Length: 191
Image (cartoon, rainbow, N blue to C red):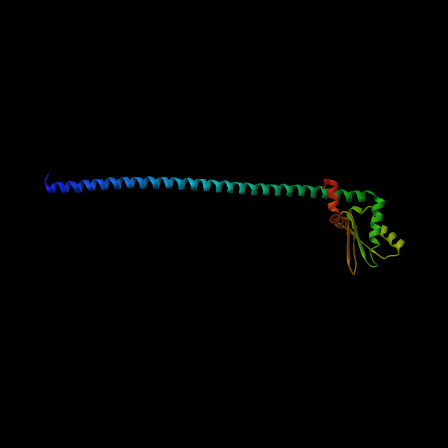
């Protein structure tokens, strides 16, 4: 081999060695990059799985809270309905005792002033007449006018120059209900 061929061979040999070394280095770097990418992907997957699980737990907890509120709301509505029925039955019970009920009306009429007008319940037509009112006024010495009948469960509405007084059973029991509802709920539901 001539000097020129030896130099070319040496250059080729060095080039092959550099190419082999560069190839091995590139393979090693590629393997390291793939290993790091796999580690990053695994860490990302684990992080997202944990976050996803936490998010699902939070969504489930919110749904449970909403469901619990809805149940409480429905229970409260049912209790309110039962209490409402109890007060409706109370109106019927009050009206069923004719003498006591008429005494209640008489007591209400004692709050009327001379010149006032009284309106009775439609349900009281059988006894609450102009004649009944005139007899009452004669006994207590008042001048109250008969104003007819109104669409309410019981009691009276008294109208006058100075003020009107709504003494219907609905209004009277609503006042009582506000005051005694917690006690009634305790009796009915053990609360």
